Image (cartoon, rainbow, N blue to C red):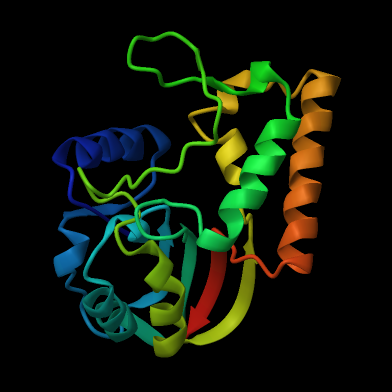
Amino acid sequence: MDCIDINEQSIKLGQQKDKLENVKINFLQQDINELYLEPNVYDIVFASGSLHHMVNHEHIVEEVKKGMRPDGVFIVNEPVPKNGNRLFDETVKIANEVWKLIPTNYKLDCIDKNHQKKFLQQLPDMDQSVDGFECVRSEELPEILKNNFKIKYEVAGFAFARRFFNKRFGCNYNLGNETDKAIIDLILKLDELYSKTMNLKPEHVFLMLEK
């Protein structure tokens, strides 16, 4: 098993855990945007919550395809919102209408810079790629993957629901609380309903791909 990361500290932490768990992993430090893989080596290539930070998707998929064995699979689990982690245009109004439905105590910002839970009147929808690489080309990713691989399995969903439970607002929910669980179920059901009836684009995708 090879594990690739650009961050030296992350690799060191992985190596420490590797020793504790007695799992043999080969850690490689690379910028995935400049990925290089040996040909026909891997039965499985796995990317989870990582590709949406990359810009050189075309090169990445070429290297992954090259590195896979003929019967290998590429498993991808990624957020794919509008570039910059924005809501898709057709989703904005619906998401904000659902936001209005939930009580105030679920709209407290968990990552406020002053470490205080600040109430947010509207669901945040700013371009997060301006100062970094958050979802910099995320909306393009599904098409690039599908154009370069055969789809063995696909699950897509969450037109807006993930934004209600992410690191910004997730701390407001307690799964041991029946009211909190009911609110979560309601938002998920509304997401599913509006996605089907309004043909909303999914913000998350799970793909199992073949050459």
